Length: 233
Length: 233
DNA sequence: TAGTGGTCTAGACCACCCT
DNA sequence: GGGTGGTCTAGACCACTAC
Image (cartoon, rainbow over all chains, first blue to last red; front, side, top):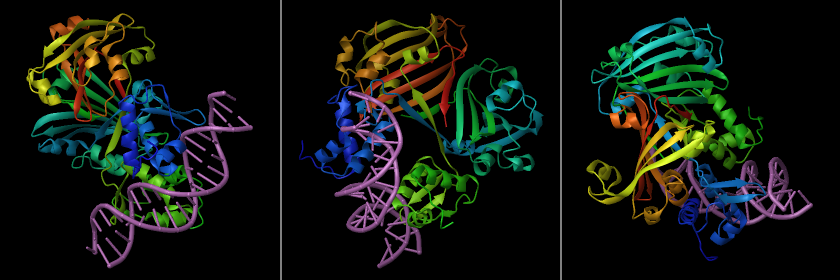
């Protein structure tokens, strides 16, 4: 084993993952330290560190200074959801995209929205509602609040051609965000918009984004029945 | 600017992110190469590389050999969903966890399941159905298929105490997986299990995991109405 | 306090790919 | 062909924390 020579961090990564997944190293057990592994693999410690860092980020091992590295007991896996612009999402599905702005104007935010973005209820924010169509079938209804302090140009932007969604992606970068997914029964209003029956199960995504501490936008996306979100593990 | 001295990759990361989010570097524009930035910041190229790699992984810049680094035009953001064991998820919400195994036995897989995991319809697999409760209220219904070739010990495992979910997390590591989220109207059967009304909107998560190419398990999780999944951006 | 991981450096070689 | 990012090395110092 001391003669094993691996060329790069990916090979070391694969070998360490093999030892973990094949239970050569049991959950909870300590893993040899970086220096020893580097000697085993005939490489520099930095190379082992690179491989171990990736494995730790994936949740398979837990690392502590002085405490050393241990195989995770309850590996908390993380799924990754790619969030493209709605237009791209629809086009990638092979459909024709069209969008219709239903409403745009300054409004006072209700208490619930305020609590979510850390602003007092009644604060004036830009509200935009729009419908996205895939091959002329309603795809998603977008109900959005935009913070005019963070994105003043949005107030006078034209969202009839470029959707608010796309405009914000291009003009309002964010550093942090939260997403909440729920299933709800369509209200009469939502059913009419999405051309379905009241009570139909629809997937709702509420997304809030921040640039550092300042809220940028909060959007409620109500997808037409049958929509599926895909994620990778 | 040439005198700017940053101590570590996190500071460099923050400075580069500032230039990107404040549009000092416009979307689509090229970014100085690593060597120049290292000279600017008074550090080694490897340190700049570490910072830029993180930014590229987050989707803000696009890097190509020879082509150089450019600010992303349509930054595809990725949301991260932490997937704990159901018991832990319920306990973290401050509830008492209990679970009830409804069924366990070898069954032939239907064509749809087979297609998803790359096995012919009719293949014998272990099927387990269970209900998880939070403070004695139904929380999620779990309908699971387990590949006995990949996890032979599962066939004789006792899932009445430790749930199949938890047993698999501990005993059947995986390297890759897919998740699909949808909203559906509860069937009569599901409504009875989850103690709700037929037609209620429920969040359904279908998760399939693989160890390299071999499928491990496929599970359909039907959450009681009102359940929300949280994700971080 | 000593051992571990986290990080930086200066230099080097290489794979990729644009021109 | 040549410039760029991707990676490795050998050594060093430091922060954290278990002991």
